[in-house]
Amino acid sequence: MGVRFLLDGALVDLGDVDPTATLLDHLRYTMRRTGTKEGCAEGDCGACTVLVGSLEGEDVAWRAVNSCIQFLPMVDGKALMTVESLKTADGALCPLQQTMAANGSSQCGFCTPGFVMSLHGRTIGARGCELPVADVIAGNLCRCTGYGPILEAGGKADAHPCADAALVEGLKALAGSARGEWHGRRWFAPRSGDELTALLAEHPAARLVAGATDVGLWVTKGLRDLDTVIFLADVADLAAIDETDEALTLGAAVRYADAHAAMARLHPDLGELVRRIGGLQVRNAGTVGGNIANGSPIGDGPPALIALGAELTLRSAEGRRTMPLENYFLAYGKQDRRPGEFVESVRIPRPGPDTVIHIAKLSRRFDSDISAVCGAFALTVRDGIITSARVAFGGMAATPKRARACEAALVGQPFAQATLAVAGGALKSDFDPLTDVRGSSAYRVEIAANLLHRLWLREQGTAISVLEVEA
Image (cartoon, rainbow, N blue to C red; front, side, top):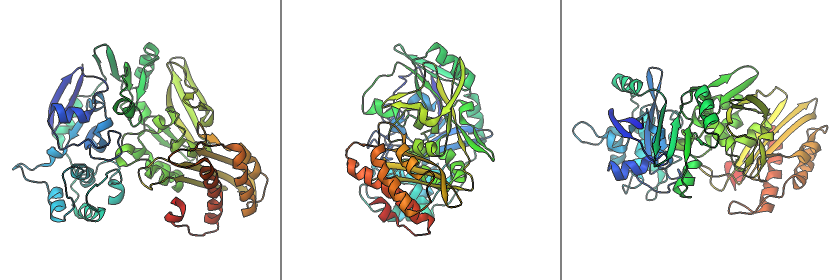
């Protein structure tokens, strides 16, 4: 069947393609749409930003994504806009571009197209773009000018929701599962959990790819070839969000941008953590399940979910099994996922009224950066006594991990500054972190303990500035 998508409403039928050829390379070198730039080839700078539209009911949901780490099969059945798509019928600049030009919001043409595409997404009501302008462009880097004029132009741009009945009909015509083969390398894009289960039973060693925010770098930086790939982003079962009074359940393919509001309702700290996972382009592609399944010791999501008592459900042709999330991580690069099995969902219990929660990400750069340490605390306090404690960290060990000695030092003790200080000292028994470019081992242990002090200060109503926290 191959790859088919709509570019500016017109059908592009590529037939069979290399399953790990990037959308960016195809746009630049085959279609000669050179307004889309390659800056970092890892989804960090935003110069490659394009808008991808998916059919949702009778509407097209647009998302800004990094084309440098989007594989071509990932746009099958989608609509696509590049910066060249924005010109008016007479070839002039679109209103947003005119505003940026008049406002002195750019000095060169390298990063500007990426900014334009992110801001254009905001003007047409793309997913995730209800955030402030500064958050929308946090995944775009400017190498020439200050952000002030860009922020001003983004604030001045008028909203004009994009409704296109013809585009909806065109996408309906492209609906359905897809697959292809390229020189013996196969790819599949199932649309249901049952179809995915059957495919994995047939190809248990296939590489599962949701948003490619991790696997994309294996190709662009590691130059790896992937033999059989199954793309998960369009598996409808895995995109479900279920909120009840008891818990929030997220399908594994729920994008972080789509999960943000529900996770913020679970607890504001969780929402703030999600807001700082990469830039918007990364959150528009990266998924909750992918962040878990890859087993990264510095993934932002797992420590928070572990502290909140999340349970993971995995599925295969043999059935389903559910486990506490912390049990999924066995060792560095090793997870409890059997051949033919995939992460189906994660269930996060809703915190009770007696639970004190604090979740914090510490990084060298506030936005769009990898954690040096990510800490999460969920303490149940009744009558001034800590009756239970769940403490988890990322960036402190080979896997996201609970701090058992710290928890033991908390349970049964008064909820007091002295108790938290003792528990902070116990972290030295829990962790012996590595030293790397993001921080030394001693630094990590110290700031992990400081997060307990920060929890205490916040519960006392003491204000803490961002600079004090992130320094």
